[in-house]
Amino acid sequence: MSEPLGITVTNHVLSMQHRHEGARGAFTHLLNEIIMAAKIISSEVNKAGLVDILGSTGGQNIQGETVKKLDEFSNNLMIDRLYRSGHVAVLASEEDADPIEPPRGVQTGEYVVLFDPLDGSSNIDANVSIGTIFSILRKCSKGPEYQMEDLLQPGLKQVAAGYVLYGSSTMMVYTTGNGVSGFTLDPSVGEFLLSHPEIKIPQRGKIVSANMGYWDYWDENLKNYFRYLRTVTDTKPVYSLRYIGSLVADFHRNLLYGGVFLYPADSKDPKKPYGKLRLLYECNPMGMICEQAGGLASTGDGRVLEVEPSDLHQRVPLIIGSPQDVEEAVAFINGQRKE
Ligand code: AHM
Ligand code: MG
View 1: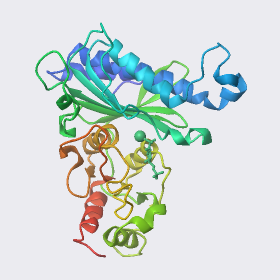
View 2: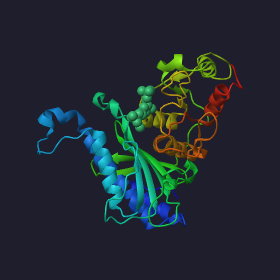
View 3: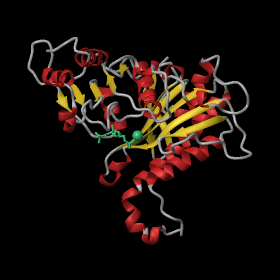
């Protein structure tokens, strides 16, 4: 039977819950809070350019409230809504150095959520697409209190992951380990409607996304990969370079069109020996989504989802996208291929 039109993300989450034996109402409730936060952030992002017009003099808006930076606003909103669900043991955010403790007296639960509330937010003043990324795990420690081990679980343990892209339209893409689905926010009804069922990434693409400005920091193996991509051969096209500098937007485009995104180790830059992107807030959730869509996510040394985290803000190199492209990139990075 074909999917009826107008399936909301909430309908979809509920239908997934019925399909999965392990899933309970708590998980649906949790996702609903994320969906609600996404709608509010989307509305604020759309108003971002109006802040000056609406009056932010003295740091106050027209309602007399202090105007907060959007990333801070999004962070607080995610924390508030997720704890409000009553199903969260602990949270961690890219914006906070330490775990975010449950507020006193709040009911806690069995889920652990790690998130980047507004990734790419340095792009916001130029109206460039940005996004929210989330990763959901189950508490693994015994006892009522959370432990660091609950947060430092490998990506393979994620029960769900997703992102919201605030672009020309707002989209939410998520997986619960049973494929990837995409929803577009219809502002006229205020609902995310199923627009991209069962997303599959092409086996190979024609797009490469990386910050080529760091060329001089790269080692010869990595440079060889890029030299190969721009060479005309009978077996592959010349690749197009597409780099927005906003992970959610760059990843989303490659997910739909095929291709590879790299934030590699900038080996010769002492500040970025492992690249820039955070394992827990960026690489793991994108890794799960990509694998669920038939793609791959690698650090160059192995599968992103198998990395045992040692630190909340750990960074790892990320090579993610179409499976044939990622395999090829990794072969070059490891020196197994030179041309
Ligand atoms: P942020 O979490 O501070 O926003 O930084 C992450 C962003 C990603 O969205 C993007 O892929 C990357 O930084 C771009 O970095 P660069 O400017 O070094 O290319
Ligand atoms: Mg980020």
